[in-house]
Amino acid sequence: MAGIAPQDGAIVPPIPPGDGRLADNIVFFARALRRAGLKIGPAAVADAIEAVSAIGIGSREEFHAALFAVFVKRHEDKAVFDEAFRLFWRSRDLVQKMIAMMSPIAPDNREKEKPKPGDARVSDALVSDRQDRRKTREEPDIEVDARFTTSGSEVLRRMDFAQMSVAEITAAKRELARLQLPLDTVATRRFARSHVHRQVDPRGTMRAALRTGGSLILPRYREAKELQPPLVVLADISGSMSQYTRIFLHFLHVLTEKRRRVHTFLFGTRLTNVTRQMRHKDPDEALEECAAAVKDWSGGTRIGETLKEFNRLWARRVLGQGAVVLLISDGLEREGVDLLQQEMDRLHRSCRRLIWLNPLLRFDGFEARARGVRAMLPHVDEFRPVHNLISLADLAAALGAGRSGDFDPRRYMGKLGGHS
Image (tube, rainbow, N blue to C red; front, side, top):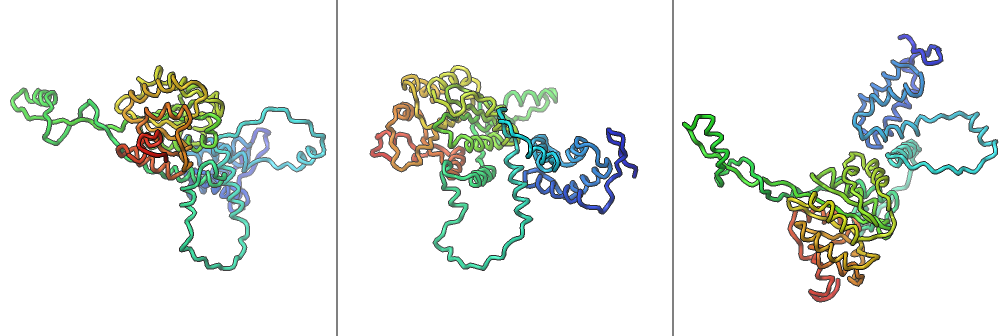
């Protein structure tokens, strides 16, 4: 096979078959992509080696295009592939590195570049690839009596999100991706064709009779159409919620991916609609776009003002057909509570079910002493904790069930006797 002429005019011969350093590197690169989440099989690796053999070793852009055409099959994989290609196939010019080391170092006053989507997953994949190639040490066999121990997965499920390490947060995100959501439905005012002889459909019956000229009239039947109710999420991203914000956004991304009609709003001192950003298939890219859209991340909080804006601009658009509202906040209002109480009452009357998720309920001795909390409690249907994987799994199960008395907000107001 003839070589390919790059831009400088030199003829570069193709890869000799069986001469394997570049082929091995392509295999290692494919393994890193597979660990980062791309769906790559052995056939794709063979096609990539054949594609590089066909084009020869030309420019870096041509090499990137050849591997991109073979490995990337989904739009959401583009950012991960680009970041993995940049890290795996980076230049290693020793002379330039030595010159840079001997040159005087000027202070770098440039603005730090934001981490790209997929950076964390690619870095973990490359590091794990290096660790897999290390020679394993032979450890002596130790017998452990596991009758009185707790499994690692159970510990992870009960651990507070605020106390997790980076590795534990990564494992928690994988658990959230496997979360099963119930198929809850509500009856609407629209009708659908039914084979159950319960309710006659007059319009359908007359339409079918017109086809035969009225000589044969057979009754048609209908039933109420059932749909999943809209799920509206109002999530607090103020400074007091900063330890939980990113893991909550991953949970909301799972809800958006697995459930129809999920509307997500973030608020601190202002309200931001991030429904469109959360619809990206890649969770890293979705969170990066949410961060770019929100202007008051980890700032103050004005719950009453943001609820007023939601009720005025968005309530009529997203709270139809028996919508369920999830309010994620600690309830620590910085301003007066009169407006907060008024807007909470309006929000409660506009939806079918209002669930307040508060991470402060992780404390056993929690009492509703804050003014904002006491102003909000009378206007919610359920008051639930949201600080670990178990609480999120219970919430997902509760979306398909009815209201539970175990999470009655009156328990924290002293109306049912005692505090929790």
